[in-house]
Image (cartoon, rainbow, N blue to C red):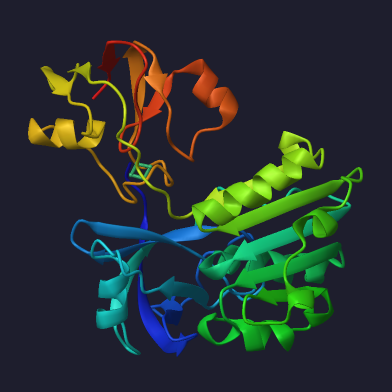
Length: 319
Ligand code: FES
């Protein structure tokens, strides 16, 4: 996948909540940045071969600056820790143009935005957009500790603050997120958007399903996911590379391909971004990603190589 890259300069950076670096990026040439829609993210090229996705959390109406929130992840594989260490005001770096895999639907009558921790970032941009359109919405922000979460003060002072509800574990019992009550019975035209740690999102999504929300009204974006390598081994024929690879139990497909010297373009390596998408020529994938839709998974036409496996004994891939 090749795409246009933008040279940007760090205009400001600030630590919020102890571990979140809030960055403002402007075009290095001083011109306006491409417009983005709420829910979009950019790929930040942190270092050669290290590319990470971050949601744009500023107001989409502001064309001259992109705002990102980068949590310093204790399990960082070189992404967030490098961002924290390297970027400071005046530093130049490269990003992709914005891509949106998590857009607002245009005809919602009501929107519920439920974010956990750093997953609040795309929902902040959504709140700006919904407020600008004069639409009915609520933004719920859940986190472990008020003092350890970013963006709290600005959300409570935002022009849409009346739509913001915070739920922190160190708040009183009456402030905790009552998911069933917030979701309510799904009224026609109500759409749910959620982002956060995988366990949090699974809880919100399962809760919405149990309340009777239609799948088409539940929107989510995983930004961090575990790669599950459990399961039997299988064989992969990599047609363009002219090699056949055995994937062992406990080994990921990506690891097996790399071990044979087969190059795969990757970014998140967690089944979230779609960078490693590949055509399936034969065989049945065991889809374990958070990128393809249910319909796309059922078609078995493509596989997310970094995290998926095989149900059949053999896969033939266009790689
Ligand atoms: Fe992101 Fe595979 S590298 S989905």
